Length: 251
Image 1 (cartoon, rainbow, N blue to C red):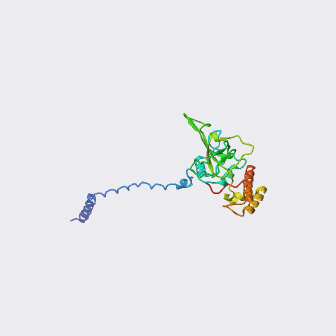
Image 2: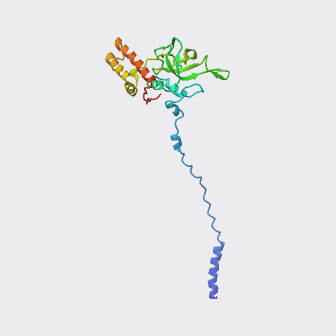
Image 3: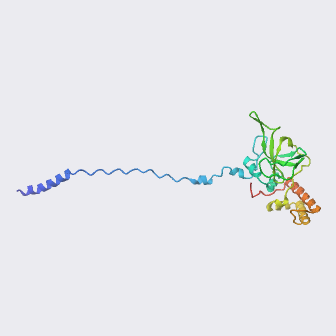
């Protein structure tokens, strides 16, 4: 056989073998995977204040309807759930925006309509109190101040009371009265500020001498007299513009 024919036969067989093979299947497309969700941005949530955080601050401006001056409802509820004499002095300071009202009856029960503690002392005629909130009468969709309305008020001793509209008047008397300020219950910062007043400092030293640290039980007449005088001078100083520090313990 011719040499060229011998060479071509194996080559032809090889080509036929290659041509007869099925082509490899195309590679399957890669399965698309959904991108991983971005981690939630918790910075905004962490930075967001609690729902009632603003009301936890000590209010410094009136809220409520035009013509009235009240405090935020949430703050009032917390304030009246305890006794806060330091805050009372802070709010009663001369020049503060809060609306004063005065007891118009001989005596009024110290009832706290917000379910907090009440004072043991009745409110007396011409006692000065601060308006915290006002409950108006709904007359067919209209809220009207006047008969039937009531007020939650703050006393100088740091307790709250609820008075009807008939029990108060907004015209200031010549010499407003006040609830007794519990000197021993005032914070160190408040006392220190008040003692800077010369008159208060003098009578506080006299009271300390006469009462000899007594807090309960029978005390001398001189002690009682000094205690009443200290109360009057504290109120006088605060009404006159003596500033007490903002309390650090909030309701």
